[in-house]
View (cartoon, rainbow over the protein chains, first blue to last red):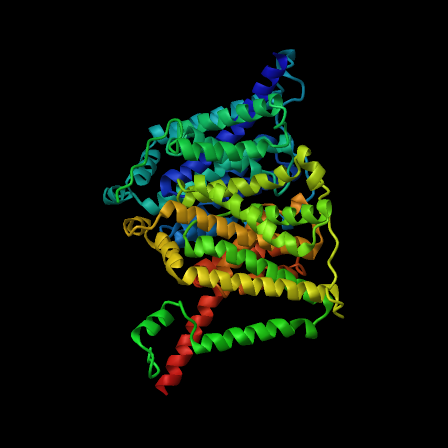
Length: 292
Length: 339
C-alpha cells in the first residue's frame, strides 16, 4: 500500500508536468491543427533561460515569472517569423519546419550551455510536509503549481475578452475575422501562451530529471500521449490525460515486472498507437467528421 | 517535347511519365555510375569510407522517399527500421557467424515484415497522427534496444562489435574500397528496383493514393494494402541501409539510433528532393558531409545547420537540390533552343 501511494503521488507530480505539455500541445493544435513537435525543445530552452537567470542571482519566483514572460515573447516571435510562412500549406511542410525548429533549439542549447548535465534548483523545501513518507514536497509543489497554472489558463479563456477572441479564432477563423478579430495575432498569442506553459513544465521537471538538452524529448512524448488520451480537441481532457498518463506510467513501471523503468517509453508508444487506433478522439474529445 | 521521327504516341507518353528513360537520362546515369565506380581510385581510404556512408544514407533516404514522397505517408520513425536492420546484421554476424552478404536480404525481410505490421495500424492514421505515432516509435527505440532481456543478443548499452569483411577472390584492394564497391552495387540494384516499382501500374497506384486517396480507391486501388505494402518496402530499404551501415561502421549501439537519425534521414530527403529517386544520392551526400563541415564551428553546429537547412529549403527550394537541377536544366535547354 505504501509503495502504491508513493508511486501514485510521484506519478501525479510527473502527471502535472505532462498535463502542462499536453495543454501546450492542445492549445496550438486547437488554434491551427498543428502538433508542435518542437514544443518540448522550446520548453527545454526556456528552462535553460531560467537556469541562467538563477545563476545570475535572480530569486526563484522572479525567475519563474520572467522565464514565462520571455518564453511568451519567444513563442510569439517563433510563430510570426518562422511558422507563419508555411501555415496552411501541407502537413508535410509544417511538420518539417517543426522538426527544423526542434533541432535548432536542441543544438543551440547544447552550443550555449553545453551538453553536461546541470542540477536545477527546486523552490520547495527538502523535508516532506507533515512528516509524511509518501510524497516529497517538490512533488506536492509541482502538483500545486500545475493546478494554479491550469486554472489561470481556464480563467483567461473563460472570462477575458482576449480569451474569448482566441477561442473564436480557433473555432471559426473566417467568422472571427468578419467580426474584427485579428486571427493571425490570436494564433501568435496561442503560441506564446503554449511556450509559457511549456516553460512551467520544464522548470517543474528539471529538478527531477536534471537539466540537459535532451531532457524534454520523452516528456513531450508523454505530453502527446496525455493529450491524445484525454482528447486532443478538449483542453480539460488533455489535462486529465496528462495526469492519468503520469500515474499509469509510474504504476506500470512499478508493478509490471517485464516493463520496469526500462520500457516506460515503449509504454507511451503503445498507449499512443492504441488510442489512435481504437479511439482517435480520445476519452473526452469530440469526433471530427470530415466532409469529402 | 518534339518527338524524334519514328516514335509513336505511346512511347512519348512513357517518356513523359518517367516510365522509360530518355537517351539523355541514360547517358547521365552511365556517367554517374562511372564517377561512382572510379571515386575510390582518387581518394584516401577514409574518404572512401565516408562515401560508403553516403551510399548507405542514400538508400535510407530513398526508403523514406518512397513512403513520403511517392505515397504521401509521413514517418519520423525510420531510425527504428534502420536500427532493426543494423541489429539484424550485427546479431547474425556476431552470434551465428553468418557471412555479411547474407545479412542484407535477411535485414530487408525482417524490416519488410516489421514495416508492414507497423503500417497496418498506421492505415487509420493520417498525416499528422502518423507523424506522431512514428515520432513515438523513434523516441522509444533506443530504450527497447537497451532492454535487459534482449541483452544476450543486443549487448545492451555496449552494443555489438563486428569485424570488417575482406575483399573476396583474393582481390588486391583494401577493405574500405571493397566495402564501397559492395555497397555501391547494392545501391544501384535498389535504385533500379525502386524506379521499376514506381514507374508502372503499382507506382501509379502508390502515387494516386498520395494525390487523392478517395479518388484512388474509387478507381479500384486497394488503398489499405498498398499503403501497408509501401510502408513495408520503405522499411525494407531503410533496413538494408541499416545493415550496410552496421557492416561499414563495424559497430552498433542503441545510442546511434536516436530520434536524430530519423531527422537526418528526413533532412536528406528534403534537401535531396521530395519525390525524386536521384535526389536521394544528394541527400546521402548532405547527411555525411554537412556535419563534417559544420563540426569545425562547434560540436552542436551540425544539428543547428541541419535545422536551418530544413526550414530554408522548405521556404525557398521545396523541391530540393534535384528539383533545382531539373529546373535549371530545363531553362538551359529552352534558352539553347531559342537562340
